[in-house]
Amino acid sequence: MTEKLLELAGIGLSFGGIRALDAVDLNLEEGELLAIIGPNGAGKTSLFNIISGVYAPSEGQVSFRGRDITRADSRRRAELGLARTFQNLELFPLLNVVENILVGRHRHLRSGVLAGGVWFGKARGEEIRHRARVEEIIEFLEIEPYRSDAVDTLPYGIRKRVELGRALAMDPTVLLLDEPVAGMNNEETEDIARLILDIKEEFGIAQLLVEHDMGVVMDLADRITVLDYGRVIATGTPDEISHDQAVIGAYLGREGAEK
Amino acid sequence: MPDRPIPTSYAHLVRVDDGKWARAAWLIAGLILIVAVPLAMGNGSIAPEWVGVAIQAQIFIVGAVGLMLLSGVTGQLSLGHAAFLAVGGFAAANLALDFGLPWWVVLPLAGLISALVGVLIAPFAFRLKGLYLAIVTLGLVFVIQHVLLRWTDISGGHRGTAVPMFNGFVDDPENMTPMEKAEAGFGREPWEIGGVFMGRDVQMYVVFLLVTVAACLFARNVLRTRMGRAMAAVGSGDIAASVLGIRVKWVKTAAFGLSSFYAGVAGAMWGWKQTYLTVDPPFDLHLSMEFVAMIFIGGLGTVMGAVLGAILFASGRPLAAELAELPFLRDSSLQEGDIVLFVFGATVIVFMLFEPRGLRGIWSRVKRYFTTWPVK
Ligand SMILES: Nc1ncnc2c1ncn2[C@@H]1O[C@H](COP(=O)(O)OP(=O)(O)OP(=O)(O)O)[C@@H](O)[C@H]1O
Ligand SMILES: [Mg+2]
Image (cartoon, rainbow over the protein chains, first blue to last red):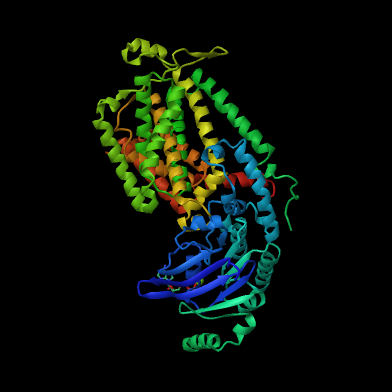
């Protein structure tokens, strides 16, 4: 058996009485795009929080390339090549677009307070080199006109791209995207979908994609995992999932109950 | 579509200024501040009282830039800034009195000693957020006051201590006569340029101007490089920052260290300005609050904001004092201090309501007006 890039085994997470996740198994292969779907409150974001080290699971194990990282903190996981975006944007309002993306380069830069404050020498050279990388990302995301803008003046869709750019700037091995097209119109959704595909095919970055837009999920995903009430109820190719009785039941049942 | 030419090199993108006109404007402003202003001070066109205000403004700028880095950028609200100024001020006094060190050696050392205290306080910020951290740092002011007052060898107790500012290394400073001390002190010999004589205060203004500019440039550079961005990231939340690979604890520690370094330097400058320091006044909670107000009014998160806020506070006090001379206020039972407080309080409220981005917000609007002129 080949070594899995990312593997979750028996993950459980409780908030007081709420069982947010229960015995979740999941694995992601190199270069794969795995979508995670499920109704609101199914535990998708909680799962991301566990993978990125924001929450510690109550039980279970997270491993990265065969190494147990269950106890590693977020920073360590970033160092290993895990990057993510947030469902509710987490951009840094004091920084402009370029600077926000440069934060993604943090782990590739070296200068400290002293070298930075002096500027000439180490820091300047480093800034110029990494600025070049950031410009590539800006070009890739087609947000050139916004590069020096304050992030809180940007339209929502552009902010989402900037956050994606910040995660890409980490040069990650695994990218976790939490609802990247939520709140976007059709055209914006198509643009982002194309970018996600490029990230997979051109850069070879493995991705976990949480998304409610089923069109996007069906088009992009290699495999889909369905969560419901914190449990995995199905995993398979888009074709298998769209014919899975348990999945249809979970979605229809929930929608039926809401009406 | 890109709205500007495709860059062929990224060197120009990382520059601070906005092109050659901005650079010319800064150059002219710099020449006025370092040549014209001292000459005007020397020949009396600028009244001695305003020389004092200018020096106070420089001290406030260094202190406010320090607090801006910690509270404005890194988001760690500190009410303890006055404590770090006190550490720097009394460190400066003792480094000169005990070891006979010249001011240019004392200045960085006072900063470093204060930075050390800052680094020791930083772990409180690992767990405590917002107002809880503010309360702990508030407590720090009282702890430092208490320690200093008890440690009379360092502070001279309630009587206070002289803060000599030696030009060069001095042997055996403890057995010097007051006369000898004065001889070795800064500003003893007047400077003469083109028939204009410049005494101690004017010289101090010039030296402090260099210190202030260096402090601002250093902060500006920190902010546009790796650690400054990490500080801004931590300022908007630990989680997003650490997911991006930032060592949050280390960044907070660095921010506390850097901020209290600035405060320590400002404290030393304060001691030299006064030549004599007591613990309280000036290093009390009220001073801490003034620094917080400066960075608020100036606009959180930018060096320019801190500078503008500091200048406003330094010049606001004498302006408010003149206000107190107005007939209807003079006859009222209000003390001058009350009026000063009232004016500052009202200013903070007005800014919170109408210009949350502070003086810095107004500044950038003015700048935009001129850079886009005559378009709008
Ligand atoms: N920090 C928290 N404290 C308490 N309960 C939480 C917390 N985070 C999530 N939960 C609960 O855990 C469950 C799963 O939430 P989660 O955010 O993971 O769902 P989700 O699948 O991402 O939903 P959505 O599609 O709405 O984003 C929900 O019942 C939620 O209320
Ligand atoms: Mg969610």
